[in-house]
Length: 442
Image (cartoon, rainbow, N blue to C red; front, side, top):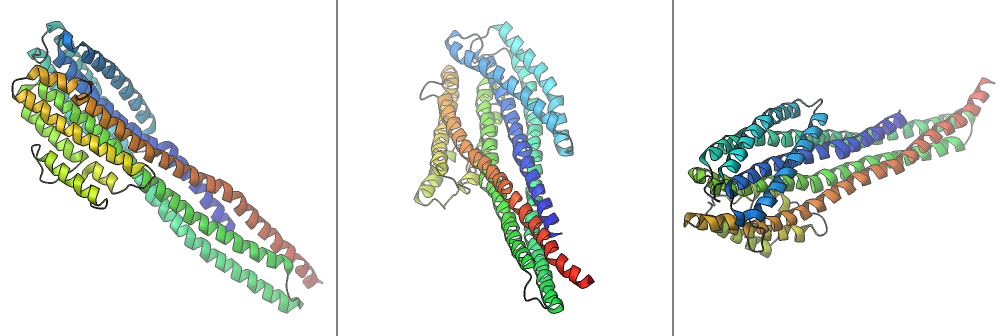
């Protein structure tokens, strides 16, 4: 019974690593990738309409077209993967249905907006009213239907991973105690059998049973420590690594959405206040500074960063970056996270420059500054932030993958030992008892 329990628990643990490492973690990342692709698709559409036929923005237009095409490809790929993975999870299926339903309508509206804009040949910042009207419908659909559905898809997949994690951690914790309890019971039975045989057949010790007893001790120790190790590998992979991967991947997706709000702000002055407020709300999602407004955010962030630099345990900001800075674990992670934070500060300050230029009537300069990748421009700062952020994500993803490998490798190394020790113990029990039973029959 002890052997069957141990080997079945080990087989279950192997299955869990396949579930979380090969299915559930990739599903979460595919869903965040879909969110990011959708919002950047909408941002590039806003840029293309905003650029109009201005030849001075030809390089930005070319970059926007390339990004737009890449985003459509990524969104289609992630939707296909999500569709294949949705079986058995009702929450994922509902969120996916909303994305699929909205995607077709969005593409129709967005396609009409781009076609109207191309036909109008308008200068930058003075887009065709009909094109802007179509884009308004498209972006409203994106922000009220597609992105919330994509976010629910992320959450549903992440919740499924969490449920698997909680269930397996609980099972492994129980397995430790059941293994110890059954091991002690079996040891007591073997010792009792030794005593009975010694009294009944006047033998001091039965070598085979003694060896079997020792093997049961070995099995109990190996199995009990294995379940404890597997719990720790699972905690390391999920809490130390993947919690940060999720937070940072969501931060990256929301950052792309915030960047899109800057383009919408310049494209559609009639909704400037709405898009400014949306940018502020997303900034608070990424790095929360309670009580700060868009005018005080930079100074509040500087204060929080200064406090953190003086004492790394003094993290005064929340949001996705707050989650990360309270979970820094791996070599190189802190330096990469600090680089990301510094780049984020630059990007946030550049946003104020965009708005100041637009509000002072320098719309052409605001558009050029917002969309340029030249050093010192806003999109260059956004790219620097995105590159730094991807480095932190990569550190945690590598750690997650290593945690999964370590869990699998320890199982692979221990299962043969468990099977051999319990199998040999059973054989020795039979060998030890059989001669005594033969004597008893005579």
